[in-house]
Each structure stands twice: as structure tokens, then as C-alpha cells.
Image 1 (cartoon, rainbow, N blue to C red):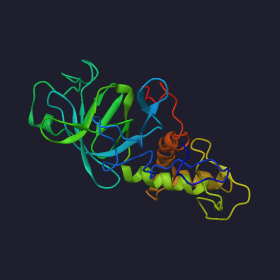
Image 2: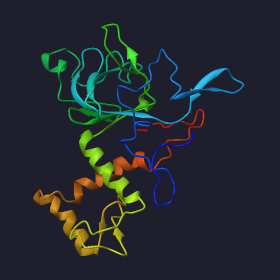
Image 3: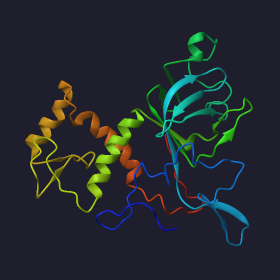
Image 4: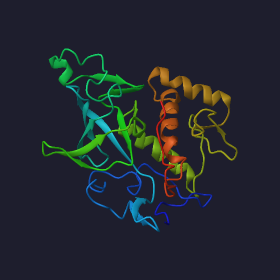
Amino acid sequence: MSSLAPLGSTSVPITSLRDRQHFPTASTIPHEDDVDEDFYALAPGVNSYRPTKHWAYLGEITSMSTFLRLRLETRDAEGHTLPVAFHLEAGEGGFGFNLRMCNPVTPSDLNPERAEEDGAIFRKGYTLVLLYPELHSFMDGTTGFRVEEKESFNVIPYSLDELLTANDTIIEQKLPDFKPVCDNCAKPLEKEKRCAKCRVSIYCDKRCQAAHWKSAKSGAGGHRQKCDIFREVKWFTDKDWDNYTFRKGLRFIR
């Protein structure tokens, strides 16, 4: 399948978190009761539908409840609200979700500020990621996501807006007409030096890099926090989301 993504300076399709082909919002995510040919195709010789690409849902956590099961409310990039209910096996977040706050049930359990399970920390303002999600119709009449596998989700400790802003910086650098400047002093550069951790921020020399890193401590929006955000986003942007191999999909390992 040919990619609809723009081409970078190396003629390789660019993966952007703003690409609705791979990071759909509520309006375009397939429903589990339907076969959406934007996501699936009939596999030759086996008479079954299989994914044709990778996709993921990104939603910022706006509220949580932990009565019997963890349930989130999330907001996607277009402002839609979608509930997410966790139905994992016992001990993995299912009935009796091990959240330290579930028994006995108190008012704070119905709207906690923070929950933790299996290495994932849930907090309002963090971003939930679901791999290969399909919409599910709940018995209460709402439509959202039912999570049944722990390898299919992750929580990133930054807001969706922070991730999209970092994404735009990464994508800009991949475009053919990108002209690098120092992120600290804004000097145009012919030969750039990049942060060894994120490989995104660009500097004239080590002095500018050190100054830019330290500026975060004074609240000037320096690189200390942005470095972590860039690395989270590059998990997505450095992958080929166009080509899916059967039974070799993406998974989160914790």
C-alpha cells in the first residue's frame, strides 16, 4: 500500500503523529463489529481479513475511576472524548485491579488523581496510547475502547499537546527544505551537533548545548524536559507504519 505521508529528504515517507492514516481519531477508528477496508484487507488463500498497516490511538487522560475496573476518559487530537475500560486478566488490571486504592471503595477511588499497575502510571494529563484499537459498544450505551492485553497499551507522562509540539519539531527536520539553526543562539549552521540522547536538538558547540540544557532549571523552556519528550515521540516517528507483517505487530514491553 502506498503511503499518503509526505516524503522526507531521503524520499522515505515521514511518520507524523498528525497523520490520521496511522493515528486516527474517534471519527475514523474502525469498530470491532465492522470490517473497515481502510485498515483491513482480505488475505489471499486464507479467507480472513488482516491489518494492512500499523495504527494507534493517542488520547490525553481527562478523568479516571477505579471501581472494580480501571476506566478512563480520554480526549483525542480533535477534541473528541472516548472512554477506555480495562478488562485484563486477574492481576493484570482486571477484576480487582491492583491499584492500591481499590479496597475498600471510597469517594477518592471513583475519581483518583493517580493509579499504577504493571509498570504503567495513569494520571490526569498523561497520554494513553492504544495499538491497533477498535471501537467497542458498551452496555451503558457509550462507545469507546475495551483493553484486554497489557502489551497493547502504554501511558506517556506528558500531555497530548506536548507530544504533538515535539512531533512537529521532529517532522520539520525531516523535510527537504529544512535549514538547521542552533537551538540555543539561533545561529544558522552548516555543520550541526545534535543532542546524543534525543538526536533532535541542534547546537553550535558544547557551550550552547550546556546553556540550553541548564535553561530548563530556570523555567526558560530548555532542553532537559524536552529531551525526554522527543525520545518518547521518536518511538513513533522512527518506525515504518505503512508496512504490516502478519503476527509481527507492534507491542509495548514493560
